[in-house]
Length: 186
Image (cartoon, rainbow, N blue to C red):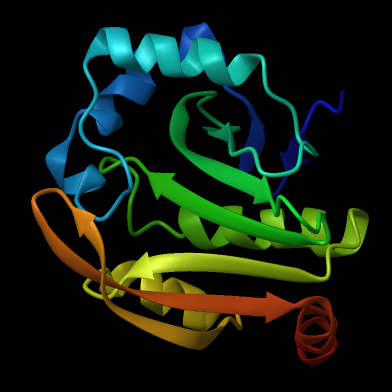
């Protein structure tokens, strides 16, 4: 099993640990952070169980979401988490998601994490395609995806019953060749 460890300038993306529990629960229990997420606010017990469950998972199993911690390397504190899932039928396709603590937003950590994940998936794992599904109201995430070169592929209207109401989503994607072209330009 592969232990994932992605290092960038300011962050380390790694497996969640029980020592992350207080930081993890701090933002995962905040309704503003979970507003557009596929999960709701967590109790401390749910957060602990989630960390334990994910500590047994490893990158590379088709169809399985694996959640990783995003650690600020300067403070060694958990500032968010991200998820990667390889497609059940074709492991050359990945879906991703990122959550940043309300205490750490608007500091460029989400973009740094996203670029680190893309570099890992495209440059190291030779993934062909990366997809992210985002709530149409989540403007911060939409702007992040656009700023990193993702293109909108789909608009799903009231396709998900979410937190008591019908929600709509966009699908964004990037191909490896688009990533490679973007690297040449930058």
